[in-house]
Length: 127
Image (cartoon, rainbow, N blue to C red):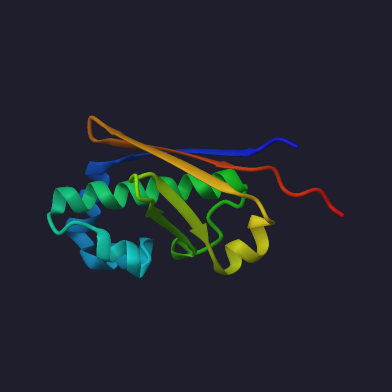
C-alpha cells in the first residue's frame, strides 16, 4: 500500500491580514494552547509562525485523506531538539484516521510563502 502524501502552500500575507482583522481569535481557532504560547508577539513573526503551522496541519489532513472534517486543534506541531517539526494527533482524527500510521512533516519559507509536505506511512494491514 502507498504512503499518503499531502502538500500545502500558504501566503504569509494572507495570515497577516487575518491576524490584523481577527487577532487572537485566529490563533485560538488554528493552534493548540502549546502552539499559541510559542507564537512570536510581532505581527510579522506571528503571521509566519501561524502560516507554517496551518500549512503543516493542512498537509497532514491531505496525507491522511480526511479533508477538513476535524478540528485544527486535533493536530499539534512541536519541534525536536534540532528544530525539526514533529506532529502528533488526538481526538477524532487519531481515533478515525490515524490507524497506527506514522506521520512526518517538513516546512520551508521563501518570498513570503510557506510550503509544507506531510507523509503518512501506509495503514497497517488488517489482521
